[in-house]
Image 1 (cartoon, one colour):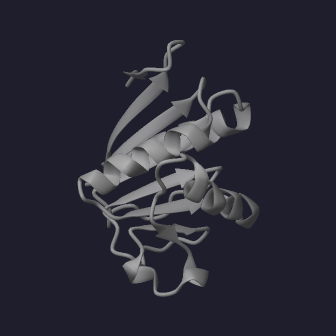
Image 2 (cartoon, rainbow, N blue to C red; image 1 turned 180 degrees about the vertical axis):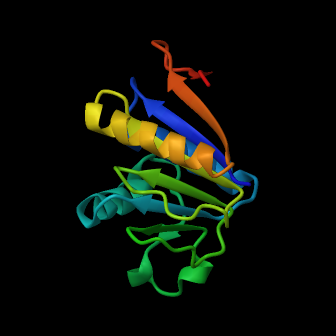
Length: 149
């Protein structure tokens, strides 16, 4: 079964946390899919990953950037794995589809948004019910990740 990690964002925004997790994934070396909840946020994240740090960028692309299979990080709003990724990141309300083709699924949500919290609870129940190994991580006041469940 797929390892599913729920990341409850409280003190740092997605734009700060996602690049760090993508860097760790590439260091494994894994390919990644980032499934985004809507097209507007997709475009914003594509641009952010080119400029999030002055001394680095994350190699990534979308369908518009050529063959998906050559992208180390593929961003999409669809349920797809065209680059043979080992890990999928679900952000900005993206719904988890069938995650069994991945080694890891990372579901990130804004802990200050009650609607996002409710959706995350539903996803937790569903994915645990399907037999996936799920863990829940929450940011402490100091910004560290603490395993809560």
